[in-house]
Length: 166
Image (cartoon, rainbow, N blue to C red; front, side, top):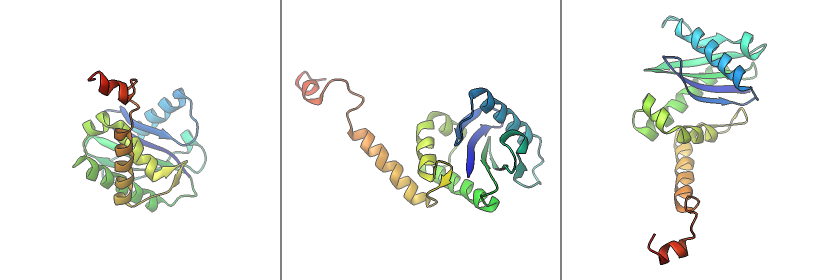
């Protein structure tokens, strides 16, 4: 099971945190500090897999990818395959690249809702449900289209707003 997905800047600021098991805010901050400390000190020529038993519990591993100014980190237990998790990070990055045309840290900051939607289309309750980036983007576009067509942002019904020219 995937326990968490984190996107952390190289300065240690969490840009996206998604925990699939409840963690109180203090524990989330401790996890981010631990993960950032572990990853920022690692040389470039070592494995992308890290044991995280001390923070998440027995049998938990981290897999990460360092891209420009971001660390993309998945925490998972022993029921998941390490290489499959590394591939899932690659699918996540490819989907973000297709969505934002060469994703950067600012895209992550200003479009966090879209990031959560993409992640929700990939992972549900800690289980992988979709790995095809084209399908994920299709679903995200469908959700955006439905949100755009709904009038949830307007408190005034359309018939009244049209009548008064609003």
